[in-house]
Image 1 (cartoon, rainbow, N blue to C red):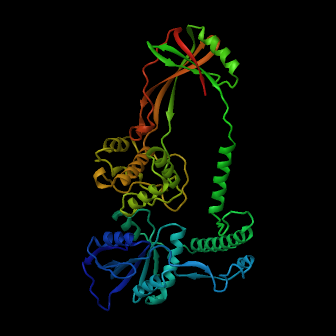
Image 2 (spheres, rainbow, N blue to C red; image 1 turned 30 degrees about the vertical axis):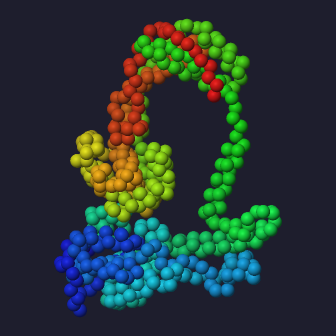
Image 3 (cartoon, rainbow, N blue to C red; image 1 turned 90 degrees about the vertical axis):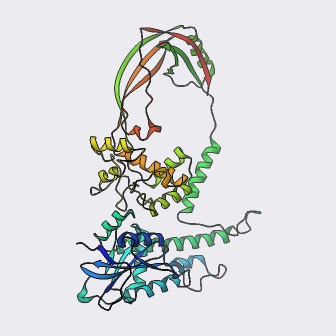
Length: 495
């Protein structure tokens, strides 16, 4: 059913017969993007409230309506114990496992008052909260503060709708508006349960630990020893890794590394034994090899190999890649990714998915870059040869893998934002391209009774490495060998 059409005027006309659609987003910037996309920039904005309100006239479900778009700023409520449980000395921590809890507002009710005020006289509610469990929970916080202030629905008709989206470009916003669903109560309740568990476990064990260890270990700062269901296991991982590092005892080893001449150029060959931890034995092997001036070619074979293209990118993949390739820390990476998302350049950057749903149009995403100054030729080639979906992966059902939603050039974005955007685009284009195909020619040499190997690669089809150049296979010179080759020298390396 078509729920949205082009707005009819730049400013609302307030007449008694026109119904009102209230739309609530999770952040002011997203609310503004939604209003700008659906009104095509022809909206009136009222500021000076808890968050701005954007209004314009349009149609909804075949009716002329006034749209009103605003936002919250994350969760409307927090969770806390009811009064009477504040004292650490008078309250036994164990009683907090069954003590009553309540929802609290941290802004003295400013946001709840804003939602109640803006909902008055509205006929429909469209929820644009992030499409994850936390966003679903905020949906019901918004409903709690708006539903009773809205006009009563006629004949039991649907009044509350949920927009599902993973990017906030104009195309994505309009697609979400034309395919509205309903909020998920079960997902919201799971967040309520998690919040309650976090509160009870965190407060109980924090108080217990702090009181128990107070004054027991001399200069130990035990005024507050916090506990949390997430932070404590994470601390455990860090401590375990620290202990492994402290307990590690490096052990010396030796490697025999001869240099032979192949096609009139010196190359180092790899010892089949790998390494030796006994120095006298390693020295014996080295002496045997060093005395030999000729390496006999025992075997020469050529085989075709493939380097697999990457899978879809989830949040962990993004953080790892930006850290290892770009040297950007997790905090800066997420700050840049969220900035890109809010400006419509990428899809939602917090996702566990590494596989795309069947309904996702990979081809349309590739077409964004047909005329790009960097990736245009590659994108055109991918479209010509066929878009291949990433292999394997998992569709978590919340958002697709992190995907570019809009084309940009370096001048459109700042330094850090561009670096993260470029990495996301390269990973996406690589994931839908072809594998890298190359030929590996392997030689096995006998030098003084010891076996050594050498491999030479020839790229047949660079595939995805044309765009992910740092993963390219090195194109070696052709490997031409006689029955034996000259050994120039041999070293015994200490590892």
